[in-house]
Image 1 (cartoon, rainbow, N blue to C red):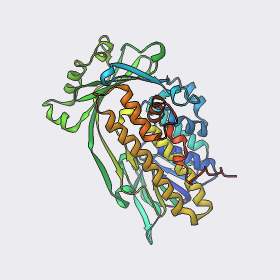
Image 2 (spheres, rainbow, N blue to C red):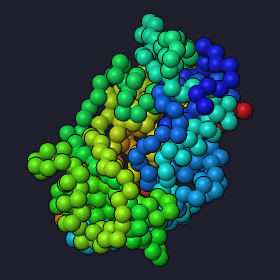
Image 3 (cartoon, one colour):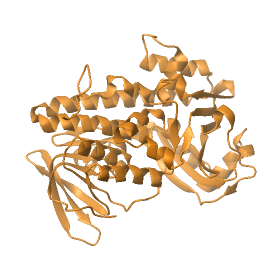
Image 4 (cartoon, rainbow, N blue to C red):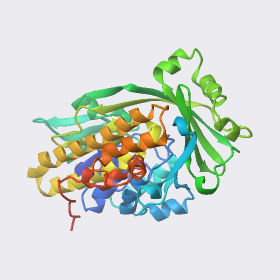
Length: 416
């Protein structure tokens, strides 16, 4: 479905991108009664990587009214993580150790998940145009007031709005015009992955977990998706990949042979896809908002995939942006204040995750060291045990604190 209803040229909000960040932002704003246009470059459903969710996004799924639908689609429930990392060998954690309210997240087929969230935005009243390529912002007197876009096979046209949200992912369609990008130099990684059927599943308390195994030079993920299919990926530094002297598929196979556990789990599996690859280069834009515009999800920043933060960070940012935009549409005089708060809290969250990823990449430590570092980041007053702080951080649940509220000291009331 590439069009919906009568699409006008004047809106309260234009959202560029229909992935989890854009669809969540659009749905939550439409739910609050605002006129929203979503411009999505592709036709859904479409393939995407990033299949392992963490519990930090479950509250947003609830707000959108989607949790029962996720259960009905049969996505694998993920109750925690299992790791082969550090000096302690194989170990794991449960999400309930961080916050019992959210006992599980999901491993999802992203084509189905993303289509579900975008469809929900439509149901809530957002106008969605797929196969709509945004060409650039319309800027008047230093303020973004709309975008130029072109439907497939059509003519370039304009749409205008009070606020424009860039949720275009790593394309950064607004960010490229309006700000800079700052790369995290020590996290320039490459991922290569494929799909397998018939691999040995995790069982018992580990059933549904993502399995992560460190090997010299990088690490693997092993994610149960559906019907005995696992997503299997290898992440290494760009320098390691370049210096390996072989292609990424060959490197992938060679590194599987170096694993202690994964090679046995895949011993009877059949590879059912070709290899895909992507540059997992962590970055953050120099500014996350400005007059008339705001960035969410990968359009704002990308964090190393080690802790599966991508979709959760996108949806948390979407929820925060939607709250902030709702305030600004009702009281335009608050725009600067609200989005300064948004930007500061977003960066705090990013800095915590990036700092912890850097620390965790030292695979020569024990569990307690990782736990204590997590506590130092999010609980310096040591109100909880270090292990709880560790699970809270890697679940994305530290966002349940006021870190993502548009105003200091409390949340913004819902629209009436």
